[in-house]
Image (cartoon, rainbow, N blue to C red; front, top):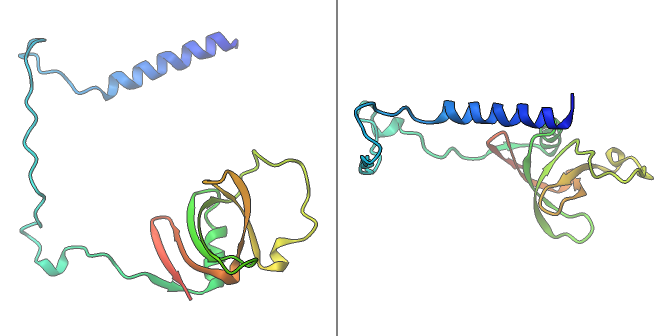
Length: 151
């Protein structure tokens, strides 16, 4: 299949998807009719539920450093946010990262095994470069929408 044919197929598929997402038009409205948006109202607690059942921010769940390292390894390429103390200078750092990014590797091999040094190699999304997370320095982790306090 040629590139131009593939581009045309993709273009047609995108048009079809956009048509499906358009709201249906009321047949009694003409082209010049204007639909006024409904006024926005403040959301109020559901009347069926007493105030004690309305969800509140839950406290952070405490996990160990090894559990935090395991949760990072279980992300399998999904983004996570980690706060840790840098091993080199003791500075606190927060990083948005992913595991398994291979697109920017330059072909070299690490001269050591990061696991034996208590490090997890990750791709830092903000700096667009590879970094190491010190497992013993992790203080906070957010993955899968759940935030953990690491003790």
